[in-house]
Image (tube, rainbow, N blue to C red; front, side, top):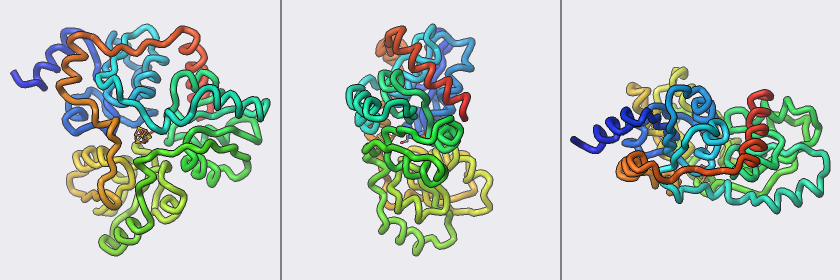
Length: 301
Ligand code: 13P
Ligand code: SF4
């Protein structure tokens, strides 16, 4: 039996479900029960009634989000050291200091934050719903963290609110350059250029669309264009190609890789599932408070 069949067999026996983020390796996406962006995966986690075990192929903050929304279930993270450098940029003590400096101003945290930071936030958001969440919050001023570029995108769409931005960024998305944009336009003048809101402001301003990973998938399926230049982590291109075999997809410049997203391998997934190791454990208090911020997100979005 090959490793894929072995994983499927253990999964069935244990009544487990495998969730994978759009940036995971192709073989991990192919074996998952559900592949999606962080919002879709968070929602999916709440809809899974039948499975008692969730194996999360992604990075830590995503698995923590699944645990927060499913406290009664066991959530495993096969690549236990897979963190997010952006999430690591917002530390609880620094967020507390900013809150103290701005009393009464609500904190909106991107899901790319630790469970502890979510627990001291008022509302969460994802790249798919951030402008809507900020727009609907009943406050003129909002602390927005940790991604400054996503903050720029939100501010552009919600000019009536004053955003206090955190100085965080995603090292993967910051690698796209103006030169990448120029070369792509010259080489593929008929292509649509779609970038993630974690890209720098000038990249967002020069693109045709600024969308979350799920937004990119929707746009590619609906558009009349046959060619697309994609400004996000290269893992999404596998899904775009699989779902749109008649269309062409190219990375904006060289393929940009999130090494943490590539830490999940079939071997690690099998071992984790078999031995039920790498469990995400959070205190009841953190779960309760972080869950409130996630529920507020669903309310405002
Ligand atoms: P999405 O919310 O679009 O899935 O993005 C998550 C992420 O980590 C982007 O780098
Ligand atoms: Fe974090 Fe960037 Fe990797 Fe997304 S791509 S998980 S934001 S480091």
